[in-house]
Image (cartoon, rainbow, N blue to C red; front, top):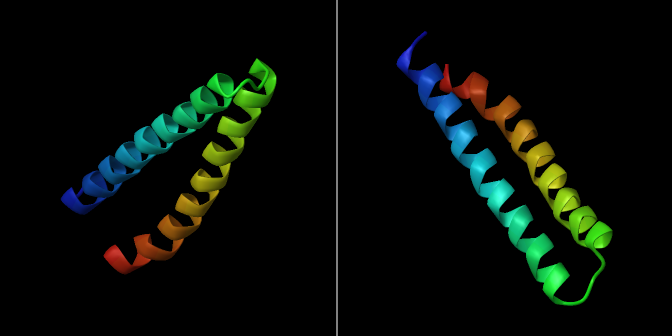
Length: 67
């Protein structure tokens, strides 16, 4: 496996971790604001999957440019 592939995988992992933290923060803020647990989890997961879809689309465009 080349160094570029490893760097791309590392970038994907770091981005996934950051997005997960942001989704958790949104869920926490929603919960502190008085939202029920199901709504807080729903809001956090909506943001998580939206950003991950965007990241996968960007990765599909950028990955061929890196190779």
